[in-house]
Length: 87
Image (cartoon, rainbow, N blue to C red):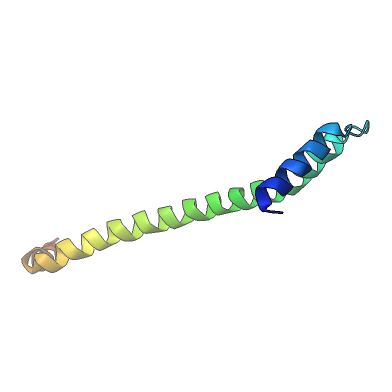
């Protein structure tokens, strides 16, 4: 017997069966909700981690730009020092 005939035979047997009269939808939905709640907490923690990492990246970016500008213009640093000495 090949697979197609076996599946047809199974489908014919399944059509003749009556479904059970027991309603399991509430238990299934409770189990689904119970398993979903930890993933929501993990997503919340990951969101806070991403927020902190983004804030740190912005701060380092601003400091990096300032450092790059001072490295590109050494005369500006010298003038700032002269201005501090004079005033």
